Image 1 (tube, helix red, strand yellow):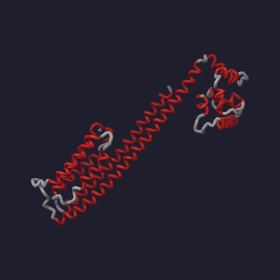
Image 2: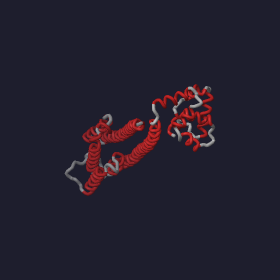
Image 3: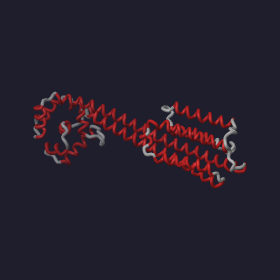
Image 4: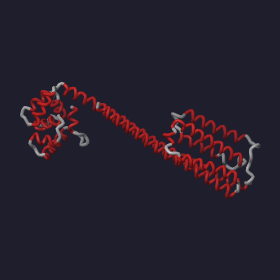
Length: 330
């Protein structure tokens, strides 16, 4: 069937659209990882420069290059599809514990707790609300519990920074607030861009479905036409083609015997078609092209094109539609 061929093409097109979406989404993820890389790199340099805390700066530097490593992993969304979701959840857990540590390390007075909200706002970018409901619930629950626990417990047994004093905490607090606001705004930007990609994917899918539906309809019409032709013997077809090619006066009469409903159906569309135009329609029904019609009717190609143009107008056939295909379906 003709539509099976096109259906295969549409499947290939669908795969291409999905590949384009994955590629675009991968670029978004890499840009988000680049944002994390920039934030951690800034903090690692800031801490060693202004406070001289080599241990914490080294820790942040290691995490910084971890984001760089993730950026360098090619085709993350396709190659690691099965482990992508657990990996994303693992990254959220890692970030949550990093926020926990620095919240405690800075005496819970440096504004680190605002980054809990940045993590929550990042969830819609990496997760799908319909497909990943359990994962989203787990991440939100984990972040919320950690936030509450760090808020109400002192964790005196954990180390606190000896490199910063109360005056420094004010500077760090302002810095953390500014960075958390910037991170929140960036989350909104990334979520908006992701939604744009999804909207484009949905639109393309709808167009595909509509095209496939049209192809199935076209195939049904072609099958009917084929069934009509199938009742003709090979001798009948050869006779009809021979009469048409020789411009025989008997051709049009024989054509109507083989296709009794064609001319009446054409006249239903426009009853003002004259005999010569109906004759041309019969030739196009046999899928004769412009040159062949010109040769069979002893007309110039320009004259045939002019006639076909008038027929197209009378039958209200769009210029985007092949006139032969239109007539074959009737």
